[in-house]
Image (cartoon, rainbow, N blue to C red):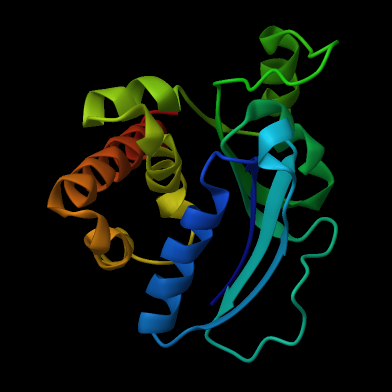
Length: 196
């Protein structure tokens, strides 16, 4: 088993928390993991991305090559487009449809959705609404993790255990909100998979 995952978004959207949850789960499954990150400036909405490589075999490189990404998991739709060249022919895009408009000339959402649609069957998520339903708009990153879970190569139950472990210091209410958010994303993605 090997999965190449690119996490994308802008600073302050919780990309590194998603990476930490996946990392913890993979390590506790005995898998090998390599990670490389680029941090933008969150106060300016700078791009943040992380390359995660997970395998049951030894890994030698941190970076994902062009055309070899199994999953692009993005919490910002325009950032999803930025990494399309990394997507493998059978790879999947899972992205939030909640734009973070941090520049003039931000393309209309219809154009972004049309480009995403060319990748096959992207999973498009209104993450902010689902996160609010779970109890906090700040949990939209966990909604996105849930939506990407079917393509990440790690059982959802293991990702939930990771959320529990990593958020436990913030109190049970925060853990519960993040798990509810994760499950809302997972449910959406599973519905998409079973209703083409």
